[in-house]
Length: 384
Image 1 (cartoon, helix red, strand yellow):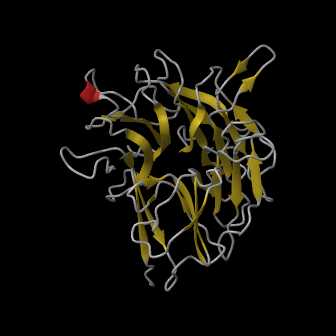
Image 2 (spheres, one colour; image 1 turned 45 degrees about the vertical axis):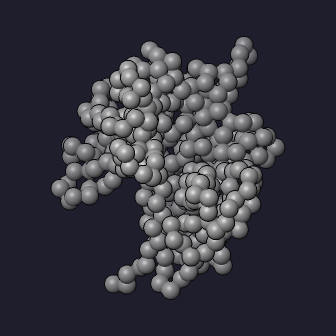
């Protein structure tokens, strides 16, 4: 078996391995790989960027307009980037889309939450279809919110097969979407949008939307496939609202919607922290099946959770796992871990890790991108 060379990108709270074809300095067109927060300039500053590998060179966009001190280091990557600022934040969110058109090839979705096309910073999502030579060079579908400052595409994910038709579906979050009624405007309520796949790709119109009835909840801050939490054969999804007011202001909440033959239905909601500004729902993911009972489980991060009342307890962060079952997810977490460093923001990112030790149980991974070892440098090196 030919062994592919790898390039290692170290991102605070994340670890990404990019596999390259043998003898290739950059992936051949039309292959594209995007990530963010993966770069430092020569002034040792982290750049908030969306980067694209494209043949014949490397290009990237930065949301800031200030001077960039070259060279830009992508963890010892031997090429430098040509920089231009567009502000769209293309690549803020990237995700596998499953196989939305049923051709046997995996597809990819990319979010640009500050994209403007008629409405300022309405946001957009681009679908790239896979094929025998890799991803298509141009998007097969583009979705927009048609509302200024909605930030559509801030979060994106494969939704599994929510309606059981055999095609992959996708879900998109727009956490700054305003809900406008005849009597009021609920600012930054947020909304989630579901799009069905089909033989021609993504169905062009939204088939399902939902939101909370609370201004500034930021519903859609995170969206993710939840797996099949109730074992009915349909894909379920999780949507969070990290600014949701429950018992406390901006406590945050998570919501699960069960798939079925007619689409998604509301099934579950939790807000467990009982703590103001806990940022519960900053991240969410399927956890796989952590207890091997045949039902999918989910994991949710609360990156601003305080472990106590002292200054040293501030923003340690926490992560919560909820087990699935025949009736859906449990209402209380089966596992909760709180970060052990002040301001580490443990739970800023969460994900299933697969089965890393081969024991038949799914494992989970949690990021703490501001984690710092006691009395050690570099400051805020991050950890997982």
